[in-house]
Length: 252
Image (cartoon, rainbow, N blue to C red; front, top):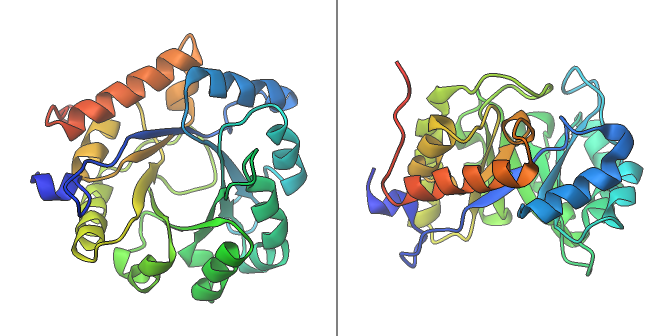
């Protein structure tokens, strides 16, 4: 792995960000959960929005996300794993629910597979005051989002098929991460690369960081620790070590 793949156009390594998904949390105590995550030192909190159409599961509406806002100040991130109809008809509500405690833009992620008119959706997120981002499922090539890269702040590479927590990491996504990072650097873009699915404080986060990702979504991989702070700290340490060349090998 060359230094170019790990750095932004100015030659500076992009900061590691730890972003827990609340899927493994106690949903009946979500306010306390987001406060505990903030106290653990996370960079953002992700809400996986599922509508039972794009993925075979149902999770959170905008009202629940908005209700969590009063419990913490940490930024929110909303991943819209929903059909195009639900994305377009409820986009205003999800962008509003994701806004930060001081009115700063929340990250709102649209899936390329679910949106025929992706440019329009991403532009609308920006117009509504959100931070537009795009996600790709494991089978989706980078070329599917190449023409919207100038519109987004983040690209999310799914390292599992979306819909359920606790799935096993798919290691063949590393080449996609490298390709996206090279494109970001060559085109002087200010874009973070996120990964989501089976990420733990082991070779999974290490190799993704070495490939060029800097934002790491962890659900069960963080909640499994005795304390959330231990999980956050260990994930961050392994990712930073990989950025500095200490990359953990995949076990045989």
